[in-house]
Structures are given as structure tokens and as C-alpha cells.
Length: 128
Image (cartoon, rainbow, N blue to C red):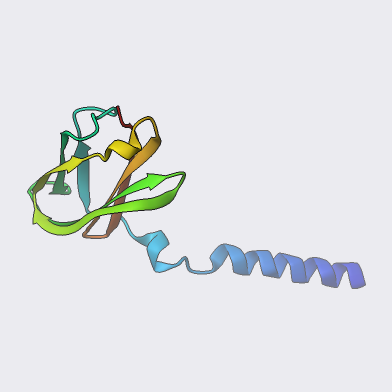
């Protein structure tokens, strides 16, 4: 009797876990596409490194308004906040890599917020 009761309680718990509603973030679907474009993964320190972020809505591909946060990471930690800007369609910018970053394995992190959520891109960098 005791083992049957334990089995029923366990089965009931599993049923609750399987049918519990997911959090809002789990159900969100991005209603846009984003693209990050840069000329190289090995920019030269002290020189402008040009990059662009493009956003379009789905499914028709029209430019939309979004915001982009950009960071530089070293071993997963932020060492520079490049910026946080609103834009429509395309955002172009230059970034000058400091000379102290030469030879380091860095990540240029882009987070674009638009309809339905946040799109994230981690772009590996080794400054020359």
C-alpha cells in the first residue's frame, strides 16, 4: 500500500511538472531577424573597426525600430560598455580597440531588443 501511494504521488508530481505553464520568456518568439556584420575577427589596435547591425521584421523583412547594447568581454566579464542606442533598420558605428587589448581573446557582444525579445551575438575578437 505504501509503495503504491508513493508511486501515485510521484506520478502526480511529474504530471504537474509536465503541464505547468512555462514562463513568459520561454514562450516568446522573436518577431524580427538581426544580423551583425564586421570586417574581421582580428582588428588592429588604435584603428577604427567598422561594424553594422541590421534588423528586419518577420516575415516580410521591413526595417524596424530596435535597440542595441554592445559590450566587450574578457573571460566572460564586461570590460567595456560600447553603447546602448535605439535605431531603425541599420546601425553603423566604429570602435577603436585599445592598444592594451593586443593579443587578448575578447568577445564583442551585441544584444538587440526588438519585438518578441532579445537577439544575442557573441563575436570573438583577437586584437592585433
